[in-house]
Image (tube, rainbow, N blue to C red):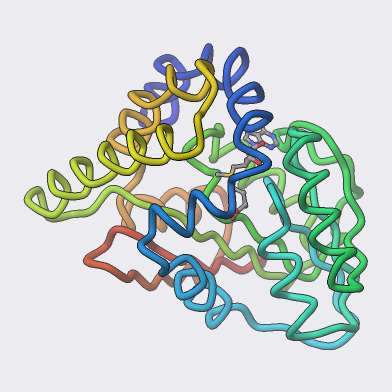
Length: 243
Ligand SMILES: C[S@@+](CC[C@H](N)C(=O)[O-])C[C@H]1O[C@@H](n2cnc3c(N)ncnc32)[C@H](O)[C@@H]1O
């Protein structure tokens, strides 16, 4: 039901507007996140990285990779990984490729829509996604991830979630509204990005809580789904294993 409602509400924005938003945001995406998170961006990334288990030589896919924050962090920790990044926004991946090359790291990049992953079945040891699920038919993407994971492989999901506590939820949206206005002003966002300010809050309001996301992953067919939240349930990290 939640997936249908989200699709009905947002499919036009997802298809028509989001790519323009990320094309505008790409050059200042990382700085804007740093400002909006009051400098805690890398702490959030480290929290997500701390739940990810890696082994030398594994093949990893980061979907909706954006500017390659995850790919770079993975390779810094385990340089023998084969890391693939997929994103629909060439602008975000251009920045991501520059960031990886500047650090002497190789990330293989694919530009495309992650609802159809152009990879064979049972191909990856690990798949990651961070801060993107609210813009996706995430159940469909989770099914695709399940298909491309090897048996025993892990899907790691990190994102802002709908907090369970209604007071925290209200404060959270108020803060996000303020952040979107502030970063829009500071970084002179384009009309495409400014017009999506309301969408960013609405998409979170209709998104999953930590338990609902765990249930969805189990329903898709993953086993041993575990979750950890930080900041009063505002950010959640899930791990789900392919049987
Ligand atoms: C908020 S950014 C997150 C980027 C990165 N994962 C991070 O943690 O910084 C969301 C990314 O999802 C990408 N995206 C949104 N919808 C997509 C789709 N249907 N297929 C592929 N990428 C998509 C956008 O282009 C953008 O780069």
